[in-house]
Image (cartoon, rainbow, N blue to C red; front, side, top):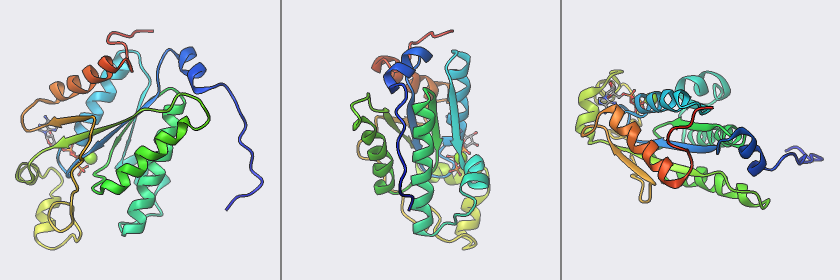
Length: 210
Ligand SMILES: Nc1ncnc2c1ncn2[C@@H]1O[C@H](COP(=O)(O)OP(=O)(O)OP(=O)(O)O)[C@@H](O)[C@H]1O
Ligand SMILES: [Mg+2]
């Protein structure tokens, strides 16, 4: 544990957001494998970038291959994976960027920790970083039928253990800000559902262009 460390005050988050003309926040996608998290996250990121907003996606590839390459899939490592992702999302959001995370994050306690870490950012009297939980809701049968990476097939064959939805639980969110159903709506409709919600909250202006 580091001691003798001092937090250097800088511009407040509010001032930074005003200067950047953008509110930083975290959009946390959660759902079964193949529910469409990465697909929607990518389309959402592109949409926001085209509006002239800073947005950045945190996904398995850029996190597990780098920052978290020392972590496996034990319960302890999964918790640490989510904790680090939350902290990194917070840093992006603190820098007035829209951080979009797309991880299965099957445990309610982990998602609640991510939410709590964001809520704590109001402790210094500054505006808190909003945490927007998006439940990518799809029946298991649909996800299993899609199976774009062949993971369900392997899990059914017993080649992957502790696979969410098959041999490990997925705890559905009870209070997600947004629920999208990718088996009923197109990718574009799902993206619009999220951006409409963000606009209604005043987190983004609908047609921002700098
Ligand atoms: N409306 C939709 N929204 C998102 N994905 C859709 C939709 N309709 C069909 N799909 C398909 O569903 C699959 C979703 O795969 P994707 O990799 O995005 O899932 P994921 O939730 O990121 O899974 P994992 O947790 O394994 O990374 C893709 O093949 C995508 O083309
Ligand atoms: Mg994915």
